[in-house]
Image (cartoon, rainbow, N blue to C red; front, side, top):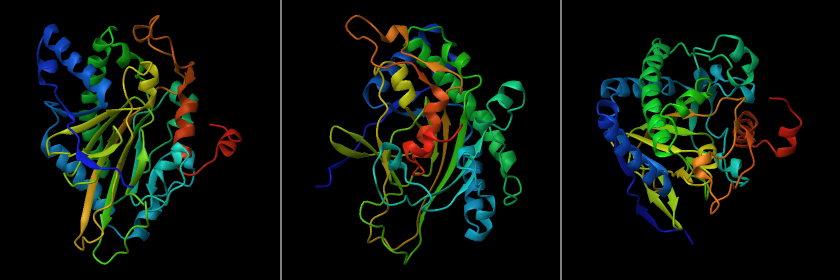
Length: 340
């Protein structure tokens, strides 16, 4: 039986008082964030300070790349899966694989970009996680548009990290300091169903059910139906209104907070089979993961006699590598036999 569907009341979070106010404003916003992260871990963020024109420009730039014929896009495939860069064609991935589920391949195409400013001894040491980017030649300004967008969204991430630290009774910059060498991946995603295309296979998703792997995801998307979150035995539709970011926490932050905060299962479903009109959803997801050499163990303020630590310390780099390659169908035995 297909679980019932409902609309999820994603927690609204206005960052403007935190950005412009004083200590009391920051404490109040942190309490709101704490409540949201204890519940679904999904937030709808406004007051973030990123101009709407820049958001539109970024979606349009990536859309122009995806509008090209497949033959032009596959020139930007990076053969090394572990680099996590470049173009990923439709059917290449199945995100439910990362949870050990066998499903049909997902119906999205994507382009992955990492840190653009990753020079120096630290990044050289961990080059497998900071591989160089490849930049398509169409549109010609794609790299420049992306960098302006990345610089703006990095500020949103830092604001949320500061609020998280206050919520957990930590120094305000506790997370920011630990994320200075964080693994960053921006994934531009295109979902399109042209008129006359075959219907998806049974249980085939635009993006299969998964949890995010790291600390924080910041999503910009067209307000086109498809995103769903699983809670209380049901799939709930989540809207992505223009002018907002939908943000959610990942598995590593759930571990870090000793399950105080929730990394929630989500997916993107195909349009209805009877829909014979173009159905496109563009999105840009920015994933903030831990630094590769960081050992993550439960935060002391999240551990007590009544709530002892539920997780052993984990190497953040090895964790992320296994999750990413698992989403591409690599088995645990294959992962054990290769080096990061």
